[in-house]
Image (cartoon, rainbow, N blue to C red; front, side, top):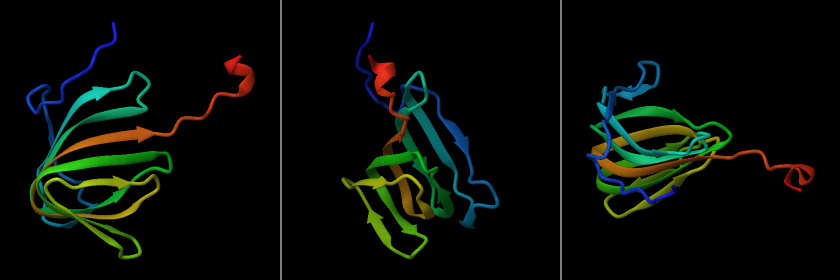
Amino acid sequence: MIHASLLTPDSTVGVVEHPASDRRVHGNPVQTTRVCFSAPAGEFECGWWECEVGAYRLELTAAMHEFFFVIEGRLRIVSEDGTAADCGPGDACVIPAGFKGVVDVIEPVRKYFAFGTQVAAASSSAAE
């Protein structure tokens, strides 16, 4: 049966980690990720993410997009060309596929996140 899922911070066990040392820009922030839903083929997942103050390099694959909504805290997303997006409580943001840059967590942050991966379109003969 298919049903809706409620995203609550206690609906799943969080994975606690730090950015890999080669990705750190400053600090060594603790990150907690709670995946509340993951599609069977892995093309979509969403949940909660929390992070302490610090900055790290981020690279999304050419097929992966991220949407997030900030609940509390502040962060700045800076692309390779220096373009920055400042995000705080109530802000929604999309990081497009292929993004390369830095995530700078200015105040401890908590956000909802959703990752979507582009999948190859079925050929017309396969759809018939």
